[in-house]
Length: 134
Image: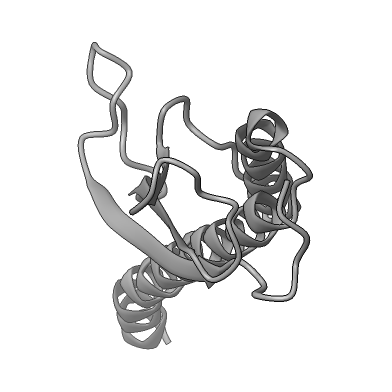
């Protein structure tokens, strides 16, 4: 009985850690994908270029918060090929990089996790070609 208990603990604890780590990374990957998609949609549906960036950041922060994560400052990058991004038919690219800290791994003195997995989200949204020009 002692041998069984020892082997069960020896095998199940690392397995449980791997499962929890995989679920943590999957949650972050889902959050990053949803954040880039919603930020792109919010950007291209904005009424003006002045409000588009704020709408995109708010949508990305909300999508990350839905998964219990926070959007790091400066992590969301929105680019478009033309200075006037909201013209019909133009493409807007949204990218987000997020570092997922593995569970039960301590942070370094600078506040960064010692072991982290990078998750990258990329989404291209096209402004509706039947949209009125702002």
